[in-house]
Length: 601
Image: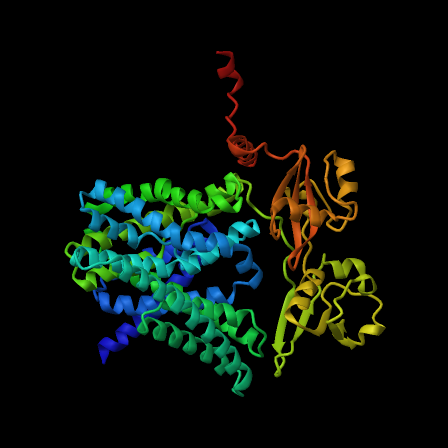
């Protein structure tokens, strides 16, 4: 009994310390996941905590469940527009890209570690996929906005590439243990079963979950429990059926997050906290699993493998897979660099240990060193690399203070807004606001007293507005009541912005470029034609000597176009220009002036 109480106490203490350490590290700019991992190592047998944990079966079980929760939350927060924008490049990276990375890294591992081809390929397969946990959290917690297509590609890729990594890892284990028992038809069939089976079960499960949420009459607190239990059911069922549980649970979350149901806000808020708990628990547990003193012999070879992965194998895979999709050089470099490794490679590294592969402890150690360096080097430079390459999207207005209540029939939401001090609503007044037709303003509270909206003369900062509408329309209201962005001072949006519905020919006449289109084409139409696809936030189009920048979006259409009068000239010149711009913002240390007597000497 005493041991159980001590275990509960230590678990609570580790979670509490993780939250506090994460708060401190965020101010220092350190990757949060690295902090959680380091805290687990400190609590382990080589650290002050002296906790001994070497149970790989438990680690694989708990790690798989935590990843299922994280992937479900990632799918829940992936808008359909983001998925459509990135499905082509993301699927290419998640399949061919993982294979190329595994083969390239495996060849390097064979050469650097003195392994056979099968053993080297096993190392490459373990660390071939980007990690959804690392990508989702590090991209979204940096307080920065990447160009829409780049961010979407990285996030969707990390949600889709786990099936390929699992398949290649299992294949490599079989190659090491039974090198003569493999056949290409069987491998192809297994891959299709993993991919197609995971997709079918995930989509079907997602629609079934939406149906259950809308049909069952439950207490509010039970809807999130229904969602998380169903996500684990989908994950475990798919794995048991020989399909990819990782893909299935991601797609189930995606369907739930993009279909209308009556518990949307309840489920999202619950899963936000649950994903944090899964993330912290996962990395702390993996930190406990490793023994730092045993890593010393693998630091140099693991570092060389990590360098080869980051600088050779991943860039080769990215440039090959993104070649058909018209990504710029800067975008391809960034996608190559932000191939973050995290919990997935460590969890996959337990598979050879559980399968009894000779030398599996060494593969686990190398994978851990690679993850550690990826979080330390790549994770710490996610923001600076985006600024250096000029891939930051135009800043968007902060959402207002808002509380939502889902309507019982799933037809919409009640939203309570607080008018921000420098919002459009406070500056323009209610009569000049463009409010969507599907939104009804029900009540207004000014100076603590209720006022009918039709009787209000204007809106003041701090006023409370009660409105009803669907999610898309309420998102428009977010921009009206939230703080405005001083866009004219933000370089990601260009020197100034104009409305995207202006005639393209007129804008071309003012700035010296030929649109070559019909007279009735708008600037948004022209940008879409030049891109050859649906535009995304932050996309740039070079016309003559200026850049047109997608500065704001409404659905699938650009609503605001930025004009950059002095754009980077492209390639290495662009990098040099960004580097010079960043250096101007770095404070320089002044040399103290010498006393007059010393100067005279």
